[in-house]
Image 1 (tube, rainbow, N blue to C red):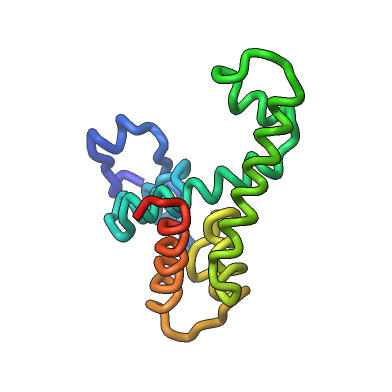
Image 2 (cartoon, rainbow, N blue to C red):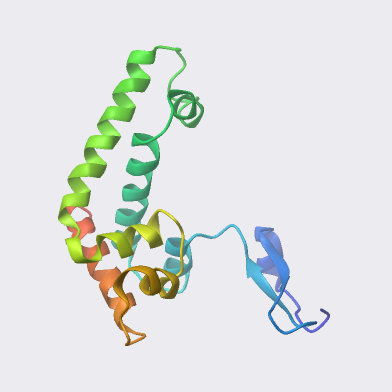
Length: 157
């Protein structure tokens, strides 16, 4: 475990852990709080508009399919009243935005895309259960295409 020395910047973020790999006794330093979109943005594999589109899609899903008490805790600073009408409107609006955005993602790639963005699966895991593409670079290209479509839909491009 002494082989992995984190940098000062890594330690400041405080969301890294030493995780043992499949090979016994070998540890890697892994960002455990990071989702797929953050990972690709930090590596500069996707643009800010693609990241924003993926994040908005996730938030529309999360809020649109949540229980009213969850929404109130998400918006506790913004919504100070316990009005169920405001909370219900937020849920319905986000569900509507999610369903509209979902229509723009190519149907063939929808399951794959949602496994990655909503379930935080790796591209290879999502590819195995949905697309089954043999070329290892193709899933990332398809993922970026979906993000581009959403970025255009949401007006980030």
